[in-house]
Image (cartoon, rainbow, N blue to C red):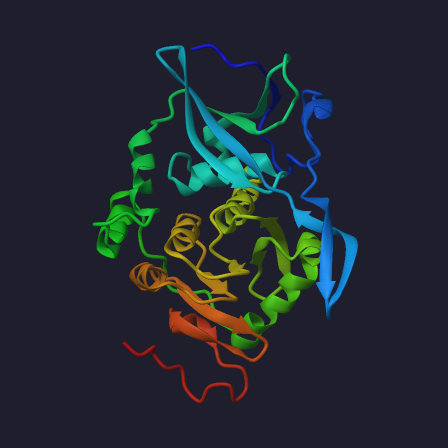
Amino acid sequence: MSPVGTCASRAVSAGSSSRTGATAEGVVSLLREAPPQVEHAVIRVRSGVWTRERDVLAGEEPLEIRLLWFVDGVEQRKSIAVTMRTPGDDYELAIGFLHGEGLIGSRYDVVDVSYCTDPDEPQMFNIVNVTLRPGLALDLTRLERHFYTTSSCGICGKAALEALEVAGCTPLPDGPVVSARVLQSLPATLRAAQAVFQRTGGLHAAGLFDLHGNLELLHEDVGRHNALDKVIGARLLAGQTPLSERLLLLSGRASFELLQKALVARIPFVAAVGAPSSLAVQTAQAFNITLAGFVGADGFNLYSGVERVLPAGDDLTSNPTPAE
């Protein structure tokens, strides 16, 4: 199977970024510095007064992820996903997605990441090719797991949890621990660092923190799943997975899919500014993930893994188990 167009190639290396276009092959000029936000004319109505102004909107474009691998020396190519995302950090998004789907385990499973472009068309940089190492056992049936990512009738939470077990996911070990005050400090730290959100108000964010509440990595996107894929993908490309000593903060709610991604990355703490879903709670309990919802300066709700959270002062007189 022959490639479509030509591809701005990048060998996988620690610390590289699709936003900077850092490569060893000198293709920086071909890599896209995509605007995460755009301006648009708007009529603003306030207190009966109509004015013409410019508003800043979060950018949104499709990204196709194509997989390339070899069988008996013959190149195989398959489009495995199309997602709507905020342009930028596309390599990290693609790698994080593949890791979350269980198709790759480390950066060493990937030999190249590239934009695929057509020399006869305007370069939109909306297709990313990921080339896998020769000999990697590729199980594309894992992608069939998407049957429970929709609201289709007949799919239950039990089937979703069983699918994770079949995929080889195991419960996280006990530990480490964090202070309740660290959890309470996370949202303010995340919001202060959300540069695009401050201008648009339209992006989800995923932030990775150390156990002391220091923000190590932040990604924003119109899709909450994309934001998390970018975080995990960046760490995987840098050779810094698993993430067993980190806290994850989600700017919105915590869904099953986000817990699944955290589980594969072996993140023991998942905190969300919003509410968790019932299946997210079941997943956290089944796989020993500490899950906190409604996290804010005044407190939070703990749904699983209470043992990992240390009371701060008189916040708790004991370390209770969540009610059944």
